[in-house]
Length: 180
Ligand SMILES: Nc1ncnc2c1ncn2[C@@H]1O[C@H](COP(=O)(O)OP(=O)(O)OP(=O)(O)O)[C@@H](O)[C@H]1O
Ligand SMILES: O=P(O)(O)OC[C@H]1O[C@H](OP(=O)(O)O)[C@H](O)[C@@H]1O
Image (cartoon, rainbow, N blue to C red; front, side):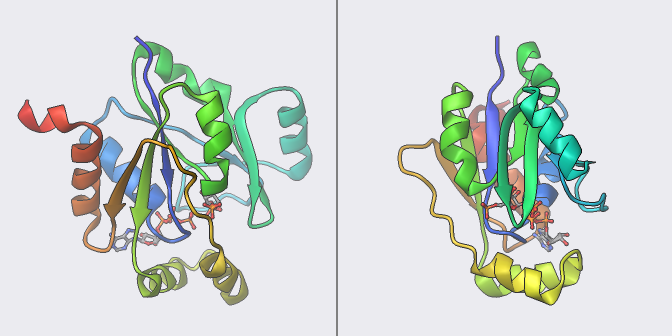
């Protein structure tokens, strides 16, 4: 049986990586997709940091199931990170909202987990994370990307605790889990 890709989306600072990690901690059979990003390595997300040239080479060689550009960076989901699907495991991937339509075309049965939080919460979190400059943070907060119609979307608020959001996300995606 094949697992499904769960695209985790939402504005910068909403807590995608944080909530994904909390979900996988509660449900270890979930696979966390390690992205390839043209950004220096940082502590907030276990991505693979590559140069622009390395990214371009791998993209041209067909190494990515999906790739996109945002914030002046390039992002890729390597095919090798999706092997867990063949074992029947679902895979959680942090995606751009603008990559959802190509993702739907690429991944049969795509599910979407859309995290939400008020603008002032996003601003506070991005400042607290300290990964971007003030100018970069302002650009991230100004970025709008409505979700395309017709997707299978679970919307979850992440303005309370991480644990609350992770539990709510798992309950929405796996309602049968609450019964076992
Ligand atoms: N529920 C929460 N309560 C308090 N802090 C949170 C919560 N969720 C996330 N954070 C914090 O907010 C910051 C942003 O979280 P995270 O990096 O996971 O967001 P993101 O959506 O992946 O952002 P980006 O798209 O910019 O990578 C981090 O410092 C994280 O620790
Ligand atoms: O605004 P949208 O298009 O939804 O997202 C754009 C990109 O920004 C975030 O990445 P990160 O904060 O650089 O890790 C998302 O994960 C996505 O890749």
